[in-house]
Length: 382
Image (tube, rainbow, N blue to C red; front, side, top):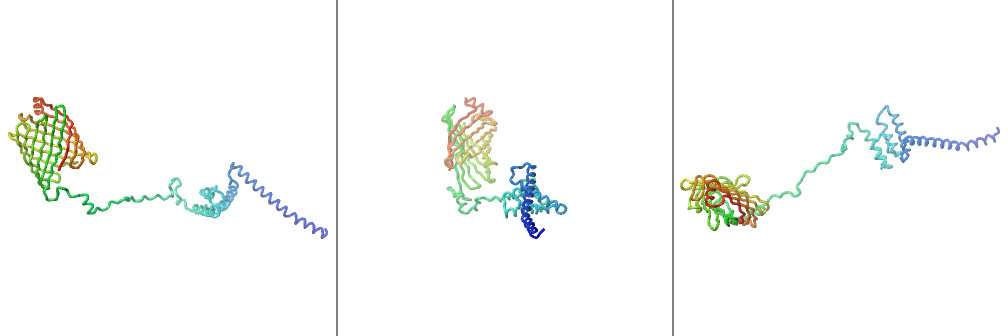
């Protein structure tokens, strides 16, 4: 071949070489994508936008893992996570956090997420939190100590003076004090007729020794049915109890009579006010009177006061219509409204009954043995 022919053949070969190389590269490219489509079709996921990426990333991860399978079981995760981050693969089977981190992170953030995932895989299995516990790995909140929103201030001298004002009658220690109180001052209008009753007491003296006056009585049909007056010396034997010694005089019923009296009065546990007095009269007559009452505040001004009173006698006394044993018993329930601490009107229900010889004397006189009545009255003290 001549030199001119050789030069022409070389020029033609150089011109056709790039076209052949391009055709070979295009054929390889179509073949590669065909394999990806077969992989996607075999999975059955035709709607997932990252299906093609999964094949590339999965193959890359498996290749790296196979290369290092005999050395470090966690060594392949660094390359695999980096490849998954570069390929935006959220379905890496070796990284449980890849699904959450790769979808919301791009660029530099994806790189940080991959490093965090590698750091998590580098942890020892014993240090991993328990995935069965929904609260594993989360710090538990510490309960803050409860503090009063408004602490109670230390009382001052002005606060004490306001809480304990000086009383009008100068209850100073060691002085002479006095009190008059009508616990019952009432009237009623029942079937037997109208009537009135009273019960009151007064005292004067010091904190330990006092002179007591007590009186109670009843009127019916315009005449006095019973009335008495007691004059007693009281000595405080404890903080809540007084020992009483003195005399009692009965004006009614029947002829008047005097008694020697001894007893106790005070406040029992649970704030029951108790008074028990024994009497020794003329002609060996004896008697015992016991009274128990309780004050139950319903509101600041409304107070319910139940009361029970019994009277016993040692022997019969026909002149006064009294029999031996349990003579009379009275139970009352009074509801008062305190307009003032010293003055309170009340409405009550009272039931009285006679027993034994006293009931027989009442029948013979044509009087009822039992009596229930509504009463209206006032309670005051000064």
